[in-house]
Image (cartoon, rainbow, N blue to C red):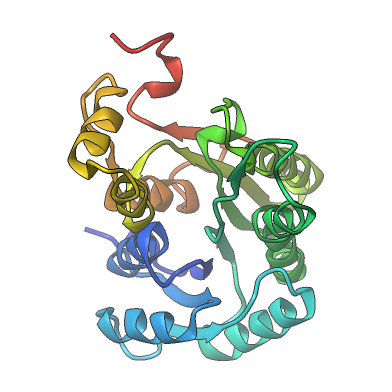
Length: 259
């Protein structure tokens, strides 16, 4: 069976753990070459060491996606390592949860720097090569926070709404030049962030059970399930999908209220 991502040279952010690392594993298994980015250099080195990949299929660098010059340099480094980038997965993000009047200016700025500006920095850096070569694919890992609101999570959903706006704007701007830009919106995913959240409660087991009970299927997604959806979105299997958001949340966002 042919590898679904053969010929794809993917720039992947937030790749050291969680969803990002699962995406890296799934893309490598389908024949992609990857250049991995994360701000945590030690964690990224550990992740790369644990990935099984043919020689020359992985490059990586620790950098901050909110720094446009640093990302431009990283994309040039990626070109030297695996060839011109023809696919981008903007996975890096950060949770900033507060209430409107309690959120600090620093929290607001960092939220947008990482969750929106970072995605734009990476897109801006890879688009010239994509346009010059006749096309490419960009996938923004968004969230169901991009179209629903959970109280007390401000300003995170504001940024995720903006990320979906960035997705649509870039998609329509460059559709005629062969570049597809889409988003993937996970709901709850069982990652270290979720475990840390449950462990912040006096009874972590009860907190976990409460989260599961919110969902129609009684469970949440694994990181691998999000990664497999990402493989589809970045592949050539959906060539007419553009400016779209694929929701992977087990049906939670369609549920009016828990049973």
